[in-house]
Each structure stands twice: as structure tokens, then as C-alpha cells.
Image 1: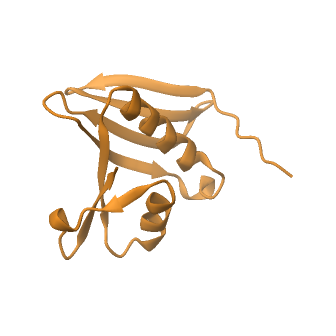
Image 2: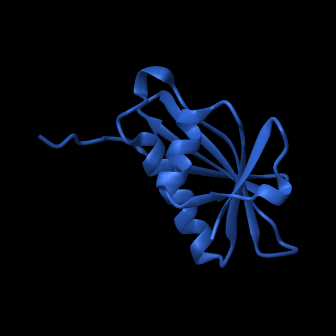
Image 3: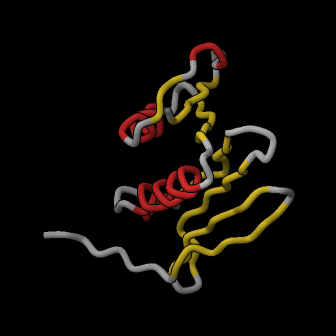
Length: 116
């Protein structure tokens, strides 16, 4: 049985040189992601990525991140993000979508992950 995810759309707002995409359902925000497209090089930085706890596991995070990655690809940008090392659920999720660890720029507490 497949699940259908209904949402009103992805709202875009520009702020401080970056673009924030928020996935909304009716009047309740259940996911958010900020995508900053660097105008000086070929990178895009993903931050503030969050899906509310009661909406996790339904494919909403995947939908939101894939939309951001599509935008990165269309703008010829390589996506990168940082994740806390002990957040194994998030790390597994990012790796499943194609992110790799950038060991040269990671620390004891934070992994830098990049899309190749």
C-alpha cells in the first residue's frame, strides 16, 4: 500500500543572499530547510533541515531534500551540510541520498558531508 503525501507546496523566500524553502501543509509547517547558493563558487549549503517528530518516517524529509538537490543541480552547485557525529539516523539518511563524508573538513563533533 503506497502512501500519498499531500502538501500545499514549497514556499520560497530570499533572505541574506540565500533561499529558504519551507514545505507546508495547510497552515501547519511540518518541515523546513534552508539552502544557501554561494555566488562566489560552485557550492550550496544546506542548513536548518528539520521535520517535526510526528511527521518523520513519511518521506517528507526525502521530498524536501530532493527538491533542494534538484535546485543545486540546476544551478550547477555541489550541496554540502554539517551534521553532529552522534546523529546516526541523520547520517544514514544523508548517505542514502548520496552524501559522502568530507573527512578533511570534519571535526571530532561535526561531520561535513558533501554531494559528489
